[in-house]
Length: 188
Image (cartoon, rainbow, N blue to C red; front, side, top):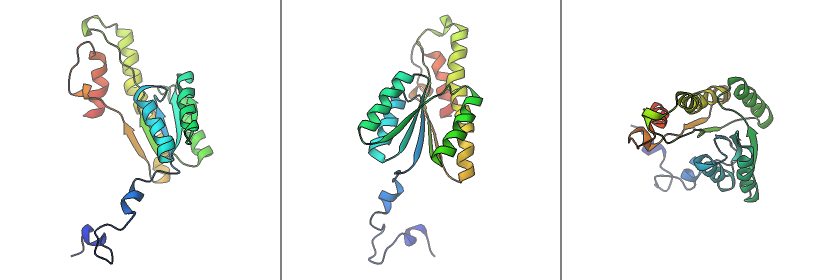
């Protein structure tokens, strides 16, 4: 019977051909959209993609100054990046940006949703308006980019979407009740 293990064998009976694993992780020439990339984990992911992996990185954030710093870091290190000032909670903006990038760059291969907001305050004192803003950014700001950029991935027949979560989904930290909801939704 032919199984996967047999199909990976080479003429000299090694299990995996030389270079096979390296090719699985080769991202050179890919395009990655990273939301919330002006700071924090999003910035770290964006700078990791750029010069290290040969990915063209689109740094998405409403913080233009922070996005410029990240873009400069990527470009100065030998990578390629560009800035897209975008509010990820606005569907029309995301749809328009996705169409423009798809047309201009030819493909979108990776979407990393790391945009989010967390505020520290006891749940019993947390203002409802601020809670609504957190929920809008943390939930809608993940859902909408998935729709907007994901539709192009479906059309091209490939793509990867990574929605960032947190240990806060499973462990309650004092004063962070509003943040738990988003984390729990995307980690469940």
